[in-house]
Amino acid sequence: MDATSHAVGDAVMGENAAAASGGTAGATAGATAIAPGFPDAEFPWYGLDDAWTGRRWFGTVGTSPDGRVVDYGSLGHGEEPVRSYLSQDPSEGRRFAVVVTVASRTARRLDDGTGMLEATSIASAAWLAGSGLLAATEHAPMERTLRQDWLDQQTALAWDLADDIDGPAWSSLTLPVNGTPQAFRYRESEYGWVLAGDAPGVHLGAYGRGVSAYGLGFTTVTDLGSYGQ
Image (cartoon, rainbow, N blue to C red; front, side):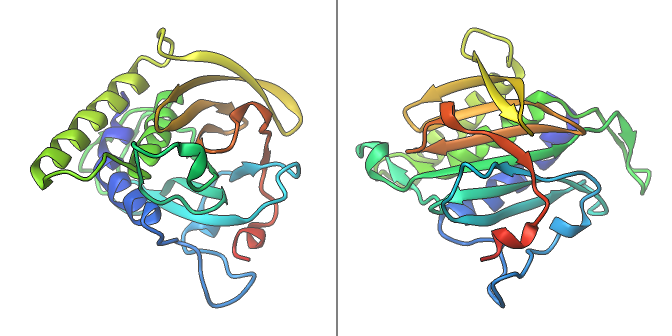
């Protein structure tokens, strides 16, 4: 796993947990408000293409460990996810698909000189998508310590799966990106689905529940305001 993913892992879990509990990074001041951080990215954002006619909303933005550069972010589609108990049929819960855009970066030194970050990769997108799905899911009610043990176990599993993106736990799926077929790695679980692949200038991840991944298409977002409505 690349160092960027490790560095942002704890922050991602906290941010995605906030989104999963109903909080959005999206602004509420107006219909066309754009969430902080999104306009600052030096890479293109990706979301679902025009075939998606449902609601669109802002997820979270993540920066480099020194806080100076936007490294990744997510854009949501459908209903904002909430924690769903495994005893429920996921199809009966909220329907959503979240697209994670990760800047494609080579190995680099932090601007403050405190360390090096390895290059980002498809594994980075897979980890961020997997952690996002995990944050939107919770085991059936249990004692706090047991719940934390479950979360730690599932987080470790998400790391391992992302590290082994070409392994047997993943299958191949081809979906359009800006109208061009693109190969992705895909897996399903009782919590939902996760996929990861490449797009021009970025690595793409996505996760969802109640929405089939097989009919999705991705596109460069030219109007971020459409996610603030």
